[in-house]
Image (tube, rainbow, N blue to C red; front, top):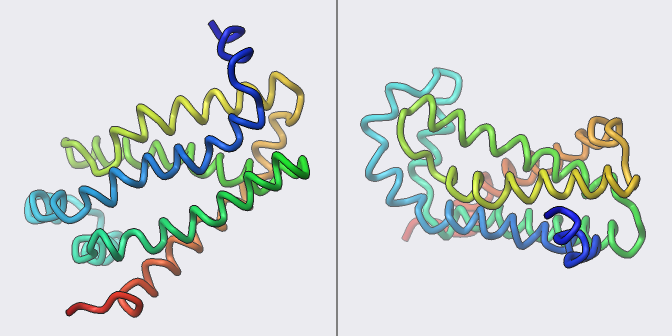
Length: 179
């Protein structure tokens, strides 16, 4: 089966699928963020660990439009990283962003386990992000483009995502103030 998939999807196409898979996952979060928090906030807030309460509170007050600002910023960086990987064979940033997105799947699973309910984003994390990440890493390793050490050493580049998300959520209320 993998041989058939490998023959149908070029490595370049697979790399360019990264921003698309990211958007598919984040569209779930953008579309449902407001209704999910309205439905679940009161019952889940007592279960949130103390150190995460302020983040949970802030997210519960965000709008879909505000949530889309850090997503847009990430999308631009992911396009640049994909371009560098395809056109320049510079994989470090691309790989770091993908490793972090792969690890992000497990935050959704952890939230579902902690809350004992469907956590926002868990569906597309499991159905899109996880399979894409596993196949991407398989292809890059199988075609000797990277080694396992590349997965580990590229991880600091993934911190770019954390900074973008943090910054995007901080400036979103300034860009889109309450009316």
